[in-house]
Length: 381
Image (cartoon, rainbow, N blue to C red; front, side, top):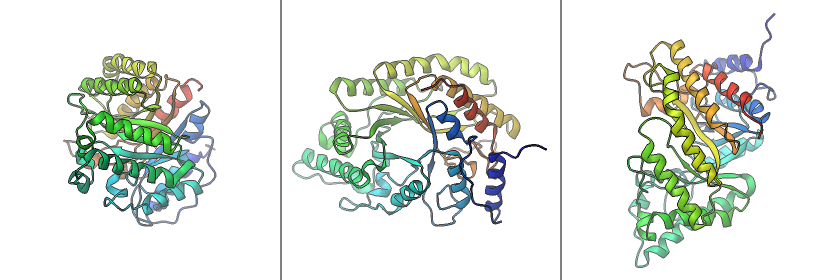
């Protein structure tokens, strides 16, 4: 008789829950979980989690089916949206902590570590509208610094040592030319660099225990060279100015380039290794913070598409995990049913995207096996 694995049980339980059938509660974590496999090499595995009303069909801790999947596979989580300024800071004088508090409380009840994402998303389009329109008054630099430091101090003061790693600054580099974004805050403070430096210095003072991360989505696909160069300049500037940045968060929203995965990887791996060499030689650690894969250029056939995504993921992780300063890998969601990718960039042929480790019925896909194999084959940290 074939042995029923924890993954088999989980797939059946979560699928039943989505169909409206009562599913058994998740058992204790299995040695086969991705986090358990990662920990055999001194790493951790996790995922983004959203907030929703109880029982909603969402990628939320309040969806029992999705919660069981996260609990079974993960050792840490990150809130997908609920710590961003748009959700956390509705007005200049108010904070809305309730939703993130609920995510954090759930994670702690299930012994899941939590990352903070993020303290400053330095792009105008991701600022709350009140911040883009803010009147900084007669002393704009003083008021801008007060606004930013108050935000960071308030968030870090509330959560203390309950959070051990923060994306302090998110996506400050323009992909097209590698230049730093200019924002209402940076214009008031005298430039992007003083703004970003202030965010990190404030975070270090408020949370001296925490890993402080610069997070961005430069990737190894074609068209990312200017973005990577801009990130390197930013990281070099941080080191030169003594800005307390500990690590680079590599979002890893990957995009396949066609059906010949081997040829694609062969073209891309040299420049990617050169980039990671440059980052680590400056003394930065690495994290994979938001892994998913858009199946561009792959056939609509599900089996062929899933295998291509898995092969691409495995090649990327084999290379990236070869850097021993990388200890955490997080996916940006675990289930196709709730991935942001479908709404962001649907396929031209109308086939639904399959960018995550589990399909829309909570069944594990080849990508899940690829991540497990990459962890198992990585060197010990």
